Image 1 (tube, rainbow, N blue to C red):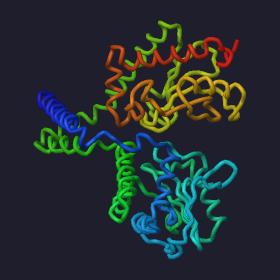
Image 2 (cartoon, rainbow, N blue to C red):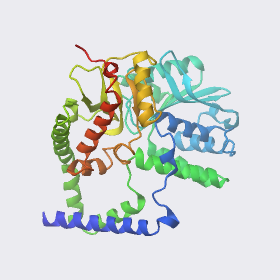
Image 3 (cartoon, rainbow, N blue to C red):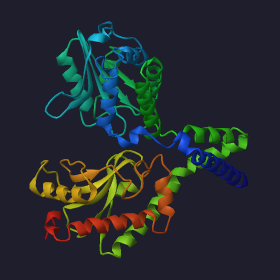
Length: 408
């Protein structure tokens, strides 16, 4: 235990030193400034960035250089029909059927490549099967690329069919580490400085927000500390093995603290059972003013392992986009929290957490910030901040309680 404490103290000291140095030279280096903090960074936004680089006619002005590098770096063997990069047409959100849209669609003179981009959420029921069927109908030469850090699910495409497609060269799976490698090649090949900066920032965003990597300077310091002795390596593995149980304990503390904070305002906590054990997609927690309330304040993780947190007013029952009650709720939330998005399940939702909670609250699986806020019992603690936000939302609807669809 002494060795473990010494290791943690040493790591904490070195990270503090790195951060102090960053702060000292912030005016010259701006180490925390990231372009993608100000851009749309959901799945669709990322697809647009990738598609814009792949487009030979794109505003980057590098013609087919990036597309050629993509094909060479991503595919084991570039199909002969995909070697005419300069004639490729690139589109996003290609309509595949009434329900499906292919994230990035590459149309060559004699073939097509469909790219399904899954940085956070899991694939849906029969999703890859539908894409496969569409591409097969669209052109005799076709290929489906599944871009994700996880394997396709059995519900999306049968494993035997997937194996058959892989052997036939019609399905390829790649991860975001390989995309980062491709972006590195693109940065080197770009003749335009502004484009190179964009590519480097995109790679940085993927490293930190999809792959969960640390800031490079901090990672280097931790790495050097761990490599100082075999005991340090052993201690690090003990910490790694214990971390899931630590998170579960902190979640239980958070549940109790939040329940108490809400009860003081006569609000009710909604807590998904899977928050305790199975951190899959679309779990979360929420706040109700009334027990039988159809539209309520909810916080939901759009990816597994408690990542991609969004919040807003969610419905208990699916309704058409633009229904009158949902539109009124959206308008009222916009006045206080700004223009965001809506869906069949959400009257209004946002992935912007800076103003209401904290800038580093979105990915609980890779950020320490949510867990330190849970431990904070002061006014900056997570339970108090969410309770305060619940009060704000309550006040918005105080004179329009009927919009919350309270069932009698």
